[in-house]
Length: 222
Image 1 (cartoon, rainbow, N blue to C red):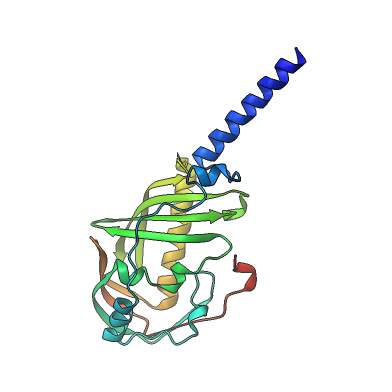
Image 2: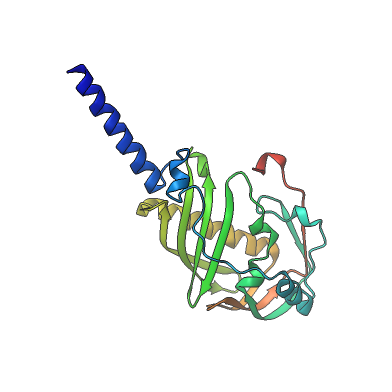
C-alpha cells in the first residue's frame, strides 16, 4: 500500500512539474528549455542603428553619454528642445541600447508596432518582488490625451502561456501609464500628434535636444 501511495505521489508531482514548466509558470531545468519557456517569444524585431542615427541627425537630437550608460535602469537627463515632425521606424527604435541591454528584471525585450497597437515580449525576473521568472507577452495601445500626457491601454498580457488576471493587468497599466507620463513631464516633451502606424510611430511636437544618462547601478545589472 505504501509503495502504491509513493508511486501515486511521484506521478502527481511529475505531472505538476511538467505542467508548470510547459505553462511557463516557473523555470525548471531542462524542461523549460525543452518547452521554449526559458526565453522570450521571438517577434523578429528589426534593428537599424543607421536609421536611428539618421532620425536624430535630422532633428539635431544628441545622446553624448558613453554608450554603456543608456540602459532602462540608468538615470536619464534631458535638456533643450527641438521640433519633431516625422515617423520613427520600429527598426530604428529596435536599435535603442536601452532595449538591448538586460537588467536585473528584464531581458530579451522585443516589440513590433502595428496600426493602432504595439505587441511586446520580454523575459522577466522577480518583478515587483515576486520570485518568479519567465516569458511575458503583451499588446497595448498609446494615445495622446493632452499636449503633455498620454493614455496607455493594455489589451493582452500573458505570463508564459497563461493570461494574467485582470486586476494585475490594471496594476500594470496604472504603473506603466504613470511612468510614461512622469517621463514626458520631466523631459519637457510636448505632443501635438501621436499615431501608431504599421512599422513605426508618427510624432509631431517637441523633443529634448540632448539626452544624457548616468552609469547604471551595478545592482541593476543581471
